[in-house]
Image 1 (cartoon, one colour):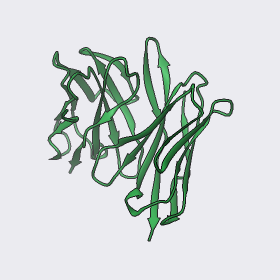
Image 2: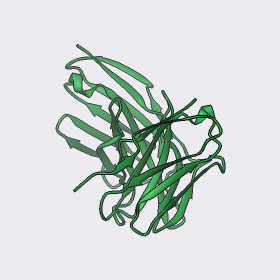
Image 3: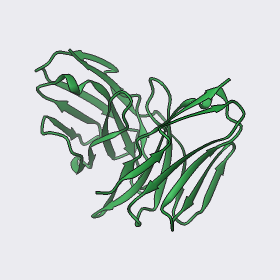
Image 4: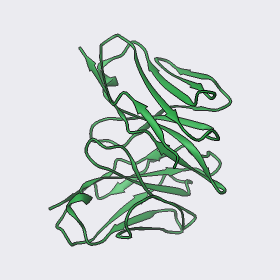
Length: 114
Length: 113
């Protein structure tokens, strides 16, 4: 079946450095790729998303890049801060008849070291 | 606009019991999806409801069921609880026409003893 692979499972970076999380998807028809951040004790929150007609999208310190040919997309966080510590999930949409379903990566635990 | 709400937030049950969890989507959202999240695990898709009909279903046993009401509120039920059902149950709602963007509630943490 369709799947999304996410790497690394854990990422530890020094405060102020950049963090990059990568995802690979299998369905070439996928056209929507959201990223979610889940803090301890909370539900996942959408932080940024990208559609297949765009190669890159930025929102302040967060950016997402998409390579449709290679079927992978990445989350970039610059100037990391302690509040960036969380679990991050990527997802890719797949088409099911007339509707869509999100296929989720396994998550990356990001640890920001002070 | 109020976010997705889930009740109860915490629940303790014993093996063999059943449980019903509730989810109220964002106003105007008609799709509700349910996920199971176990410690250190990702999001395991249970099912999705749209306009009171189950539209998609994940690979969970028949003990897991759900329904959606005409006001888009949704409930999920787990019968004959097992220890392995201890998890955070998340629901997410989305708006028709916005495609796949999902908005999550805070979850219900279920502990089965």
